[in-house]
Structure formats: C-alpha cells, structure tokens
Image (cartoon, rainbow, N blue to C red):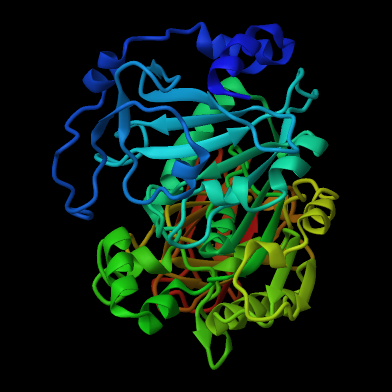
Length: 498
C-alpha cells in the first residue's frame, strides 16, 4: 500500500480515530514552520562536535533508504513526503510490512524536544487497530544492532507480525546514532519519545517489555535497569539476544574506529568520563564472568529475562558477555529462560526464535516490588520503594535494604550514597512499635536516612547499647524522621521508639 493510498484509507478506519486522527486534526502546518521550530540547528555541541541534525528538504519514504540510513537524523522541511509538522516534532504514516495488519508511523523529535540541544531523534511506531483494552496496549520496545538503523527491527525480525497478532504497540527507536551503545543521551531520547507517544496511544504500564540484539541488547537491559520509578514506565520483562553487556570492555577491546565512535557518543573515553559509561553498564567482565562488585543489572533481579545466545556467533566477546549475564542472574535467583544453541558462525537476528521469546515474556506483567532490594543508582530519584535524595554526582551509588529480624531493617553496603528515603512499612516493618535499623557503609562515609510516612515524633532515637546517634530530627508537616546514625558509617544499630 503506497503512502498516498494510505492517506485515502486513513479516515475510513475507526481505530485511527482513537490513535492518529486526534493528532492529525491538532494542526497540520506548513513545512516552513518546522524550520522555525528547529532552533540553532548548527550550534556547537561540546560532546558531539561533528554530529548534529540539519534541516533537509522532505522526501518520500522508502524502506530501502531507511534500512541503509546512518548518521544524525535530519529534520524534514517543505512539502512532500507525507509529513505533518507539529509543535516540536514531525509525523507521517509509512507503508506497513508484509504479514502485519497494523499501521506504522515515523516520528521525528526536533532538538531540544528530543532531549538533546542539536540532535533529532527518529522512531518507528507500529500500533494496533481498534480501541485500546481497558488497561492500554502492551508495548515491545526493540533496539537495533550496531551500525544499522532502527529499521532493522521492522525488516529483519518477525516482531512486527507477532505484535500485530498479539495486539502490541511496537516501538523501534534510533537512539540518535547507529552506534549509540545505550549512552545516556540515547536513553533520554527514548524517555522523551514515550512521553509524547503516551499522549496519543494508551499504553499498559504493567506490560512494557524490551528486546535487543547485539548492541541493542545493551540498550534493552540498560534502559530497564535505569527506569525503576513506580510513578513512571517500568519494564516487566527483557529479551536479550547475543549482545553487549559491558560497554567498557567493548571500548577496551575495540579497534580504533569503534573506540572513536564510543568516545563520540559518550563524550570521552572510560578514563576521561568514567561515570558516563558506568551509569549505563549492566555489568563489568572479570575473568570471563560478571564482576560481582560491578553489576548494575542487579536492579532487575525481580524481572523475568529471556536470554538467547548463538554459541557459534563469530563475535565471541558478545557470546561471553551474554553467558555472563545469564549466569549472574541465575546465580542471584532471577527468573531466566536461558536458550543457548549453536547456529554456526552467523551474527543475525534470525538466530533468535522470535515467537518463542515473545510468547514466553508475554506471560508476565510488572512484578510486585520486592521487599528486599539491592540497588545501583546513577541519579537522584525514585528507585523502586526507595528515593535517593543525594549521592555522589559522578558515581553510581549502591545500597541494600532488607528485613533483618522482627520489626528490623538493615541498610548495608552503601557506597557513594548521601541521603536515602523510604517507608519502612513497604519492607514489612511497623512504626507502632520499636523499630531497629542496622546500618553500615562500605565507603566510610555517613548516610542520612529518611523514614517517610512516620506519623509522629518518636520518643527516642538512640544506638543499641545506649549511645547517641550523630543527629536526628522530625518534621510533622512532612511526616518524616531524619537520622544520621554515625559520622563514618560504621556498623551500628539504631533503635527508634514510638
């Protein structure tokens, strides 16, 4: 079906009244408006001086052109190409792929609406026909391999057809670069994309899944492990296929050309900007396995994983890293469906059983928050039932919080943490009786603990054995109890008496 026939077909479909027509009726503006909205297209970017989006005369869509696309996303202007130019983005319907009954839209977010001052983002979205289920549509977010476009997921997998059959929204982001390696800017662009999509398409927040192959598997895991805010979208399951899990090892072992690409998208090397790499890295490799002291993927131990690896893949490093991911998750008690087989020396999407992977992950909805957590935080904000209010700005913080006895909790192994807030009742404790908090720091610094939802000032806050905590205070307005147990983070037990 051509774009022009799609345009004539569009109004006759009631489903699009629920999804696309409200958007189409919003304001289809002239192409010159896009140029006016795209501010400072040639401005300098200290992190990516040689990569920026530019204005480009609009052309008709071609899957061949899209499949071979690399480089920064240009912003279309002018008539033609089927574009609707709206406030901060451009949108058009594109031809569906054989075997899928669902329409596909191409979305371009202009900078800075893309989350970046000079780079635009390009996203392909396949959405179901008909009114959405009561809870919204389930979503599969698919990430492309290295050095190809996001059309890879649409053209080289069966996910478009399977998502159409199951009634899924399929989202394929470009990540602003064909070699983005899940860098923070690429992940931020996906956040901006989802904010926009949710204005038009109702998504089921309990059924958001990610899938990735090769470099894309790094994106699938990293985005999931960095998005744990209960008030926002979180991932209910991850599909990983033979791919990168340690981007630092990728840099250290890569040829010069890939090193330069990584330094470009991360704003430097692992030596010059280590935090940029550490914060998105699921794990670090050590002697062929996951280094237990550097496993940010621990954040996802409560989430089911479908891990697939082609043992014959010529990219031996990716095989080793994928095996390390599966072995680490299994060793920690995570639910993992691990599929390992030798399909010979090929690096391809097709060594994944698409149907089996999606059928398995489709069984799961967003799991309940665990009562024992071990979390790695790269920024302040909500991480499951805990809120990091302060931490070292250039480090990934780490902490464990778990029940430790009768009305007792233990906050241990804290690193680079400044202030952590939580409601002890979320972890099975009560504020109505004596509460024991066992605390210790792994980096020799003090941590501020904030107990939220605390109903009234306690009668006493003291150390076990009669000593005094470093400080404590209570806010009736906020119903928060703030405690600093010890100036150096030494192991102590805090006794809080109502």
